[in-house]
Length: 195
Image (cartoon, rainbow, N blue to C red):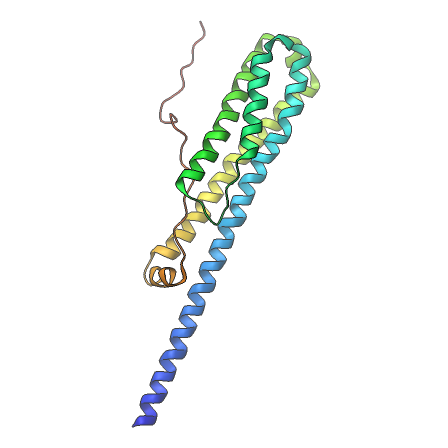
C-alpha cells in the first residue's frame, strides 16, 4: 500500500512540475514577444525621429522665417528621443509619458506640414516630397507596430490572468502589461475649416 501511495505522490509531483515548467516557459515566451513587439514600436518612432532633421533642413531653405515652428519640431524630437521605456516594466505612467512625448512630435510635425502649404516651391521640391512620403509611411508603420504591440500584450495578459495561468503567474511574478491607449483628446473629431 505504501508503494502505491508513494508512486501516486511521485507521479503527481512530476505532473505538477511539468505543468509549472510548461506554464513558466509559456509566460516567458509571451513576455519576450511583448518585449520584441515594444522594440518594433520604438524602431518605428526612431525611424520617424531620424527623418525629422532632413525634413526640417529642407523646409528651412524655403521657410526660414518660420523658425518658431522649426524649433518646436526639433525640441519635440529631442524630448521624445530622451524618453525610454523598459519593456519589462511597462507602467501606465511611463507609457503615458512616452505617448505624450511622441504626441508632441506628431503635433509639431502637423504644424510643420501645415505651413508648407504656403510655399508652392517647397511642395514641388522632390526631396521634400520624398521626405513627406517617407514620413507618411512611417506614421502608418507606427500605427501597425502599436496595434501589433497591443495584440501581443493582450495575448500575454490572457496567459497571466486566466486560470490556472494566473496561479502560476502569481507564483513566478508575472504581471499584466499596459497597452497603448488613445491619446488625450482623440475622442473629439478634428475641426476642418476652409475660412
